[in-house]
Amino acid sequence: MILFSQFSMPLSHACRTKWFLFTSPFLISFFLIVGCYQDSPSPDRQTAVDLLITLLDDRDTFVRRNAAEALGKIGDLKSKPFLLATLDDSEPAVREAAARSLSWLSGLDSETRSKLTMLLQDADMSVQRAAAQALNRF
Image (cartoon, rainbow, N blue to C red; front, side, top):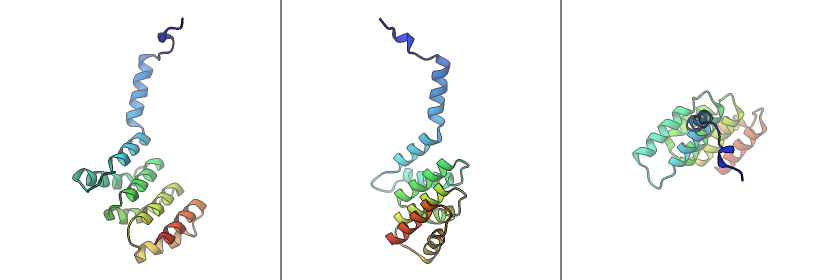
């Protein structure tokens, strides 16, 4: 008979695992994105938008990319200037997410069109594709 205790992990390892789960950038981004899907604007939604805008300057590429994507899915026009600035990010994944997110926001002004057109010359093919798709949506 196999005992359960043979498969259990030491308590110190379990505590470290729990700490990682609560501090993981992936989970933080996930909970922010999930918390943003509501039918009507609320103070909590505005707080989430403000926090996501702040996360666009995070040092972790994954966090910046997820924040840009979440802002586009929320669709708050307040985030548009911040997403435009994010198109100049050093990481292609972040620029791609920002371009996609701008396509989800309503309206294409001359500044957005200009920035997205410049991305058609980006060194990264996925960024070029996202910019082309964004321009095509408008």
